[in-house]
Length: 173
Picture 1: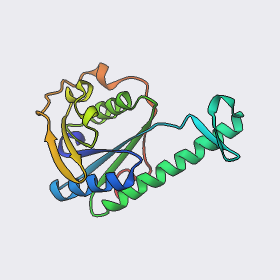
Picture 2: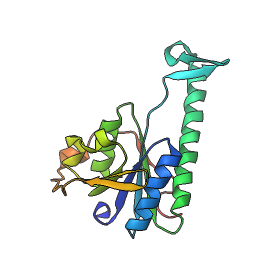
Picture 3: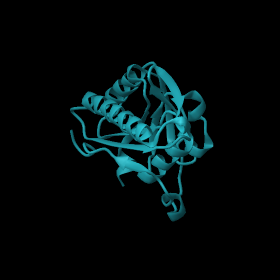
């Protein structure tokens, strides 16, 4: 299984912080890297210099805004992949407002065994700890590692609706 030998890293929108975390992974772990990202669309749409709640925007304006946000997210993910140019990289993202639930879905879909994160609060979530070992890395430094998990991957864990996607450059850069 791919998830067993691959180290996964959860990345967000902060390139500077995630770059340090990714460099740590590149230095400490040989082999392929999985990059997981949860895309949470903005509820405010910039219109004429103001930020308007999406419920007040026209449908075409909402669609254009969603397209721009997705393009920006894909550009950010390509930047992360460029850091790993010497490695095999698998990138997956999911669009969801609930970051924890979405990350759990990505962990389950990929049968992740080791996940590097920077969020102290999320790294302590049982929803993740029951399926994978979490390494907390902040500012490029290892702070904490959870106990190894012994997940029981069952069919009900691996099903469910999801808007996950593997980025086009998913297998090899």
